[in-house]
Image 1 (cartoon, rainbow, N blue to C red):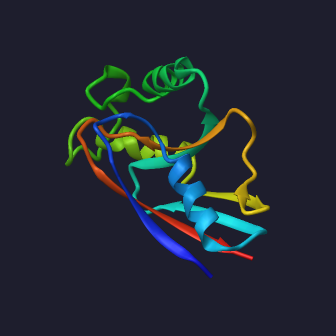
Image 2: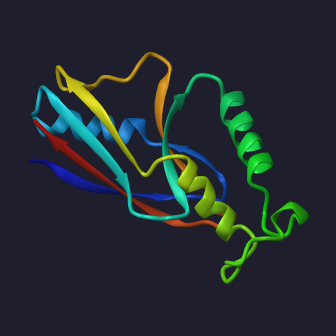
Length: 140
């Protein structure tokens, strides 16, 4: 069963598309049908399948999550205890808990079965740049 690890470098909070890398991994595997499991090996970022045609979607998602879970310095977050790694750390963990760290995508005819406007994204929740590892595992 083919497996690889992608390393993505982020520049701070945002959605980083890696659909092409995942599709290339599936294409070179030789497997025509199966399931691609995507797993991110971190607790302060997550994975999303989301529209990749209009960048306003990514902007609105970032704005929504910032409003939903503001930095620990915001008065509404006064209850936060975990602050050892900065005001973005615990909010990043909360955002990751609200989204997902594993996604399964069907594969047919050697291609990801994503919809026309769907893309695969790493959702970085931290302010600083990070190197994130994403495991791609393809099973028949």
